[in-house]
Image (cartoon, rainbow, N blue to C red; front, side):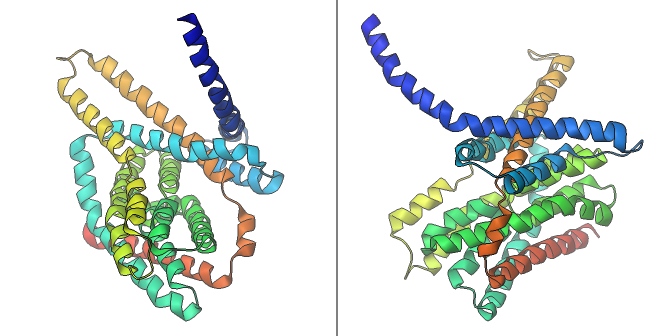
Length: 371
């Protein structure tokens, strides 16, 4: 028995060591940037800013990540850990956000955001298809930019690419456009939302969730708004809205595969890309919202007292915030501004047109629906 246990450990230990050595450098860098940004924010608020002024640590952590990546450099040994934070840790943070809302509130926000999302998707696709040919941008690249801008950023791009047989260069162009304009929106749109919608955090959340491209970017913008203006509702609303947008990838990929059937991948390969795109962390978000609903209904009569239930909500909400801060550090570290040098002017213009269109349609629809 001992020999068998030693043999099993001998097989597992090298694998675990390789995994740790692969992910640890990047995770350490992400944690260091997040901690430095949080401490820097505290010092700035305490010594340089006046009373009543606040600075979002999310804003600082993103900018610090960008500065490290493009100013100091980024060794390949950090890549795996940064991607782990950008993907897995982000999804954990988004799922834990569900504890902030009941299932009824999730359904209400989802239904309210649905017409805005549909208009943004249709308009973005139409604008890109109208502008791209006149600028000489390939049809496949146009589809990638439109899908990434209107649905769920880089995830949509990577999922759609096999279905339309996009080349690696086209995928890189589209991802860079999404990263560039999405990052800009993440930093500017919280202030725009405050200026347009005033103190209405719910409308601000609808705007951030429909106008910004990637899930990480929406979470970052929602946290910036919440930190700056003390309105956590904006983050919760933006997250629900974005998750509803993400679900549309399940319909868009098969439609695009059908549209390009004469030059697309084999059916099994297209199905594989569709299957991998299923946003499973949506189920985690709904599970947390279900837990919140059940807890609110049974508190006092169930195993937890009101104080214990509120403490549980606080712990899960704090865990979500920590995960999202780490993910935002990874967002900054993943933004390579030097990639802009390899992009032509035309693809950037198409991406800009799509981004501005989605933002404008979102503002218009929210204003019309609320009047």
